[in-house]
Image (cartoon, rainbow over all chains, first blue to last red; front, side):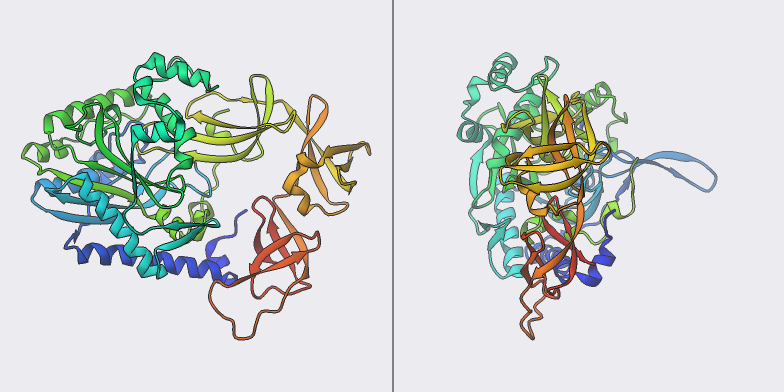
Length: 348
Length: 184
């Protein structure tokens, strides 16, 4: 059905140009972090316990020795647990470019089950430092690979030079959806607002799902139109592995970057408190069980590392394929991935 | 159906009314459940609405039927077709055919979508071959990688193609995106 890339390469000089530029983007990422005194790590993609994120489905396999002894094994959904262990071990600035895998996603020519993720962590730093890293990194790549920070995406200009626009989650709801955060802080108020706006709301949807639905429909498509936009301080209930804001406990110190409505990365002021981390992982495990997801125990090797003390740190996870699509002005993943998944798989 | 079954062209029912998915984007936030962000066009009028569906949400499919047809002609305000099986004629207003019109060739085969007995939509093949009727020669020595030009195809539509495409060539076009696929 789809012509495979190796075949397109023969006749389509644009495709070859884009794929070569993608390789240059990957090289520029490495150059940037090495120039900033980061060390490149290579942690496993095959692990015993994958991430606990309730809405992700890791690929499951098993590890066997020659005698037949076995253990559960999974492909990572992100390398974050292993990289944080290295922070606990005293590494101060680390980055990694690796493949991650997520099963049961909405697959299409835009979404791949296997993708390249860039993660980096800075010890004794905050998420504000990571915001600056992100701006500088993307601007560096654009200058290096495209010769300019002034790019075109889908027919409209996008300026990548820092500083980028910074908008808190609450301010974004107010600016782009006309909703004041204190008007939707209870489940009942949020439900009423969404019903008034003709959303299809079911009584079983929790507050987090509803506020995300509002965000996805009315805010996200408007973000980062002229330049990338940093959305920071997400609801504390969506903290994941981030610290709670000391300024306002309703929010977690987490940020995402959007360009033209597309989410590029998800970053945290990293949670370092082992007891709190255990509590959140157990909570997420419970939610996984309720959602009928594959159930596995919390990663004790990760918690053991945190218990010995992890320095305050900031970290970011950035989708390299999405960044390549943005920089190389394409909305087709097959233009920036050497051999897309749908050349091999035919789902039925 | 659920969000994984949604894609461009699928017809669903919202509050009893049929809507066709005209834009579809899967969204997976950094934390939390997946969504499908869609634009839906009403098949009973030209209203377009934004609608976001959650993973796991049940979505009602609309009971539509399809009939093979041949495209006959356009009188400007409507497009006329002949149903292949019955030789009956059916027509669609120009605003329903929309952008698809630029790929219509006389006597080509297509499918009409019927809802409650009335034609409401048109589906044409996802890939179609067209004769290039106008193309400028690429300037000699212009070998810049990724260089493209615009050509006109037999229906009058303009398509962006690689420089090597010449007048008289036949090219395959993705009719959903309007993009060049390959020289045939």
